[in-house]
Length: 372
Image 1 (cartoon, rainbow, N blue to C red):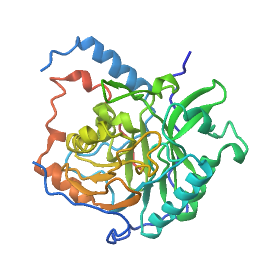
Image 2 (image 1 turned 120 degrees about the vertical axis):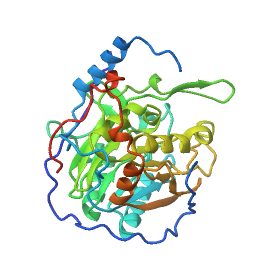
Image 3 (image 1 turned 45 degrees about the vertical axis):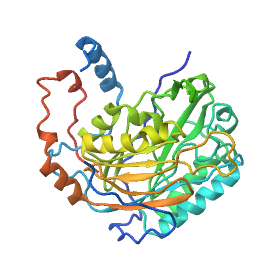
Image 4 (image 1 turned 90 degrees about the vertical axis):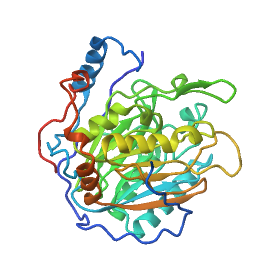
């Protein structure tokens, strides 16, 4: 039987040699970018169904205590530079890790404080590849030789070397106790400490006749825990690829004080043109937060799964502020607290929600606490 255990490691207040100010954004010259101008009932199931689902989600969600902020204030404490690495990956894991290390170093040199890698950055994407590239994840209670955890070791070293928050896209994870496989994202602090483990909650099981059929659940097990990452800049919500299609994760994270939603993802040549940008903009608009979507680069050899690419940053007003196309590159943008405040003051949906009307989605509301 598949385990639905979610994993969360809540860190104490971040300590160590961490930069106290964000670096001014330099012009992006290593990737083709574009800037866009401002974008222009079904009868529901019985309420009891939603109550059961949301109550269950609330009971398992191990979010760190989040600050209860006024809807129009910015949850971002100060400017921070975000870098999304659209990485070209192949069949050689060591080569993938080496290339990822080079691009992370480049992003850090450009002044990035938060760096994101794409989904399955250490391997080709595909159910046939997951078992061969899977690694166990070390925890305080369970250690492994570094030879068995090269991706974990590489990410931790990169984060501490460059003193950045590093969201390691995702890797195939093997749970040695159950032999189950997960699509898992690891987040490390600027001191190299593991802050969070996010197992992809919604598996990519789709069948579009004549275009694409992909069933992740043939090989992978789903995670069961939403993830909110505590940083010195504020909270970051995290999902993997297909998770972006489910608005509840972003809504809960935003209500708990997230200033940014990140989605490492590998949309394909069918779903990418249809929904990649649309979903990123909708998640930003619904919650008035920044959204970053980070894809692998499109493979030059044309083999295997073909990613859409087009990594991008969307601002709280649903504007695509920077994006790339299909080739390898780095997308960089400075996130600003005043932009969030400006959008929320102009259209104050955070203070206008009517949970007295749709109380079924109010159960998992924000918890009170103090931001680190």
